[in-house]
Image 1 (tube, one colour):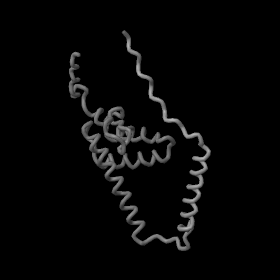
Image 2 (cartoon, rainbow, N blue to C red):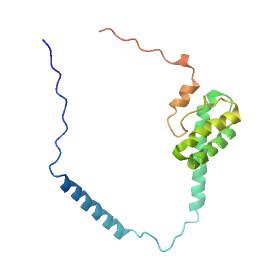
Image 3 (cartoon, rainbow, N blue to C red):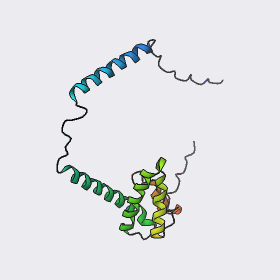
Image 4 (cartoon, helix red, strand yellow):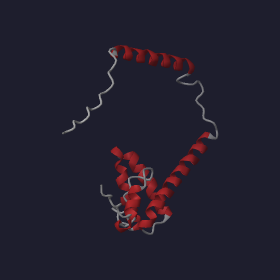
Length: 156
């Protein structure tokens, strides 16, 4: 006696009036744009920045760069002796190269620059970026023998 597999679930039937849905979406979008245009002036008469605006922006930008470099320093510190100043300079240079090169190819510059300044091989400090998950840097930092043992499978 064989059992037949259950039939695959089918997608919900689409509405028979797709043009009605598209038209209704366009009307709602047009209404929203009209309401926003009535409330907002696209070019204000007085283009002024508050006196505290630019210093606050620059302070926030420096704090962001510092915290980003501190995080990357924390991730690469187990790989070898690295000064925080070197990591900060490499992080700022890497950010410049990320902006300058297409497709975020500047991410390849950061490990190369750190290898040049610290002596750590670039292959060991090639985390994708300080802003992404730290799993790559942690995987590079720990030896393969420190991985937890695989779970034994239970017999059925």
